[in-house]
Image 1 (cartoon, rainbow, N blue to C red):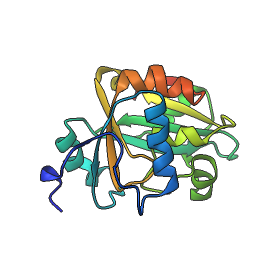
Image 2 (cartoon, rainbow, N blue to C red; image 1 turned 90 degrees about the vertical axis):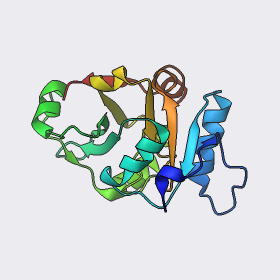
Image 3 (spheres, rainbow, N blue to C red; image 1 turned 30 degrees about the vertical axis):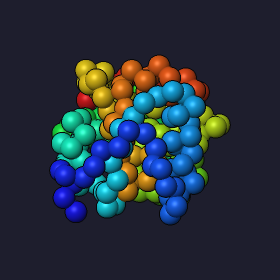
Image 4 (cartoon, rainbow, N blue to C red; image 1 turned 30 degrees about the horizontal axis):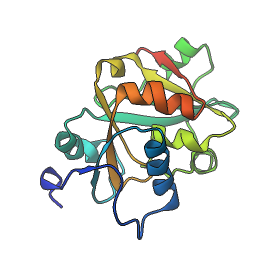
Length: 182
């Protein structure tokens, strides 16, 4: 599939046949909040590297999303950072004043965010009704007018205004971002 020539759609798909419920719920929430977004559909994109052409097509920079936890697996974090930056656990852990962070096990990702590996996205916070996950955002993302993310499944990608994510989406899902410097 040639991503660079894939059609860009405004908003939700007209035909939702063969789309997962969690993806449709993402569109429902964005629409209810009057958040405009562009969308492209594509083959599964399980890694940040696979998303480079998607980002070129949407005119955005790669945003890496990592699902992390503390050693005891009692505190969970969703880290959003520029794709070209390297994740250094000691840097983030020190800024948060917590013991070493590591990647959270897959079962917690599914249980808390209703997301599977390769589909981690800020949109998954809509499924965290008990606020068990702290959103962490690299401060450099604030320089971006738009951010890209998956609608809880990695066969579509969305382009959303950073301002809409921070001022409409996060308050609606009862989460706040803690800003870190990576």
